[in-house]
Image (cartoon, rainbow, N blue to C red; front, side, top):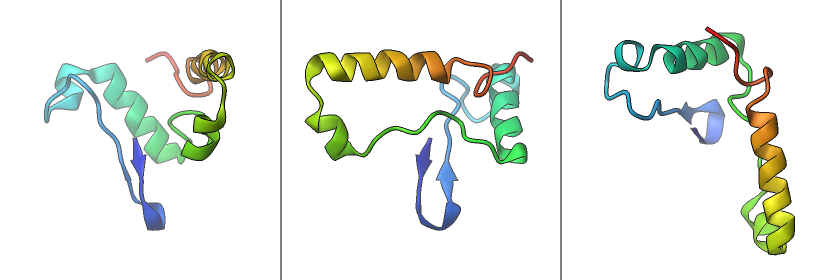
Length: 79
């Protein structure tokens, strides 16, 4: 998802084409739930400069933890 000014965001359901509910129903449902409930799609990521300043091991650790959090029930719920 890409977020722009004034609360505008663009989300993509990869692998769905223009018919997300038909080809990726679970992902489309997740997207709709997050929009209707006004909840974040994924945990926040630090600014580019902060990521660039991380050592390789620090970045790997951050990314591993981010993935665990992103896969949690806070962001992904069963259909």
